[in-house]
Image 1 (cartoon, rainbow, N blue to C red):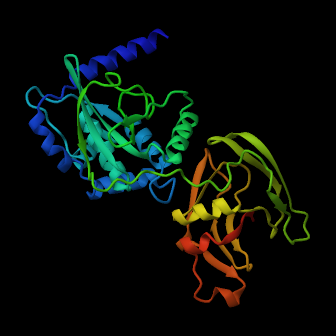
Image 2: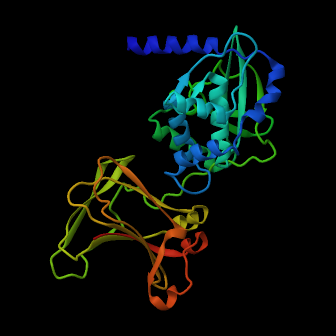
Image 3: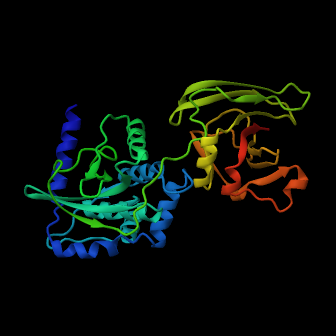
Length: 364
């Protein structure tokens, strides 16, 4: 407990050093948020790739974790405020074996740039509180009446195991924003200076406000309900057994125990409900996480439509991993598996995927 007090004191001192006083320098901020720069887009894409699809709260959470966890705090020189461009911050970070380095406003600029580069909407808030100043990025969550705003807040509470996620509510526009401060424990942590300190807002591309969405979930893996198992069509006694497990990457998982003989396969499948099917229209592919040990076997993911046309994607020898590994299959990478008369010139797309009826995974 004493250690945490010391750490908080150190953070408070660093924030005091992070002064923002030159109002004329604000005009330079937007140009520093270089969201179209190759280094910025590449960095954001690599971080967010674990959760493919349009901009969603999972991607934003991963970006925050990566930047906050890999940040090296370095104060500006004495004199006028200096704002580093996002691409320069990344390059400097690489030299220091980190994701980025600089002070609070450099962190805010980088956060805004990475989120903007994946389609999010951001602003940077410069705050004056007493004799100190501070800067942090905020991401637009949507209008107050949008039910997905509350869904994202509840998702963040579960994700970061907290009962406090603060929304920055704009009374004049009914907009809800989420702070992404470098010193905080999680997105939406305590707002620096309280609810109404003196501040100035710098909006990045204010004409184009698009909120992130909740990532569509086909199955939360909190139960085996609805999952059917297959023992293959071989005569060599391959078998599979599934049960619910609380040791997943995000708590829930389905544990699969199987015995494969040479040339055999086992699998599990589930009908996709209408709501999940509709949500697939907003995605570029399907992702899942797995961890396993034993002999290396191939994982095959299949999507079967109502007319029995089946598409598949496989990962050879991928059942073994030292930790939870996320695997992604983009719709454009799926191959048509049959019937052959329906596969000629037939490729899986976002629109087509939303009409599929069954998801299956096979081990062989």
